[in-house]
Image (cartoon, rainbow, N blue to C red; front, top):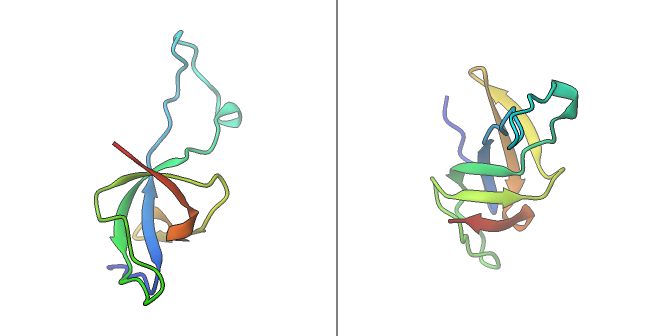
Length: 90
């Protein structure tokens, strides 16, 4: 199944956070923070007022509680507005 976002929406897949600290301590599930870096999987066409600045494959930094989480074919995606993207990570 493919997702085609409408207007200025973007579909992203969260990049998993590391499970150990730099010093090698393994973090339990309750101590992990929600990851904020995601990979863009699909981009809407934009609108007359909003030009799309991201493209498929970009790694982006998103707002912590942005978007709507959906599960399709056992894969979790987040659908959010382009304005919820804070930066492109290079």
